Image (cartoon, rainbow, N blue to C red; front, side, top):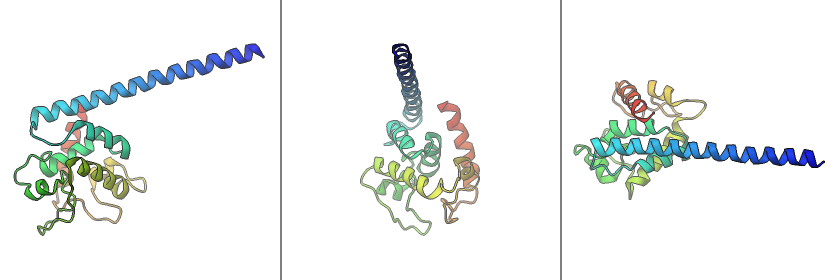
Length: 171
């Protein structure tokens, strides 16, 4: 009995040690991605209100990749730095959520962080459903009801380009 108990305790100890190593590596990877996002934003968009920590946090919470988040943020508002995106900046919609082609705005946020969280939630609950993947959205960016995210006919073409760019710089 003692030998079995000793072996079991050694197994538990090794399992816990392995898990700590894995957790440490995951934290390290997360920190590395967050650092790369931060470097990118600071270098190319020093005035952006978008924070790398939000991208990583909500990426993990809603299972939407950082490169997907950055792709749409870049395409829609240049990470909230495009002065022509007046409605988006006024409404703090980094991803143009609720901004319609007719000039109306249907969503407004009190903070940019709230906009990032809501975007990830919208993508998770309305787009990444029924087995749809980000790769499939890049080919045809429609929600579960078949409505396009953006009316621009070549939106997906530019999504592919941006998505691949962010994959290269983040990993």
